[in-house]
Length: 315
Image (cartoon, rainbow, N blue to C red):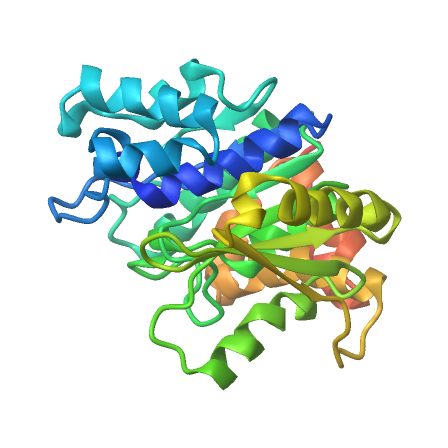
């Protein structure tokens, strides 16, 4: 998410969806995955708030969200519209927010991955009271880049989604179709199941402007609640009735694994993919807290790895 996107037409649908869930008792936590503005014209589609003809129709979808965003746009220059203004508006009742920018200044891959890890750990702490965490990276989830690579700040990595999930949170994340063909897009939509193999998935897609999809990753014991809420959103609200949003449930997959193994992958992969060499692992383990090392020990199924991790515990 960039501040320049605030109140864009895509933002409108996102807040409408989150507000709907919040008003029905779901405590929302938002990690903006905030990145610096880039000087482009992306996020410029805001005339639905001010143009008389466009505004009349769009406002009917959600008058409260429309008015809150309109105030942000008319009262602030485009370069000074921020996610903090959205937070202060109260359009998502009782929500918690993590609005730290993703660190990008590190030139060394190890330091880049380490600072990203610290940033992510702070988000877990900040959003610990949420029922549903919304992750809002610029370009969705990457299954190719790791936290040590330049450009990864535009993405969430799947281990971050999985760790939120195995913290006991349900998760919804921005899912970017990009230039994928239909077959590639279908595979991408369920790929997160490799990391959260016991979860039920449902995708809501917003069709105003550029197509934007939101991938819900829901614990089995909560699936009935979300089935009901999302069905009502599509069948009974102006968002769904107008086909501004459509829904696609993705419950089945052919991933052969167990929830326990996937939980362990979420912890171990985040460590091993970010810190590749033995020297990097030793450097990072020397910086980690005993609690963080304990997570690695608990997640590992390799006895030698457990001993290696344990040797870095502080007395």
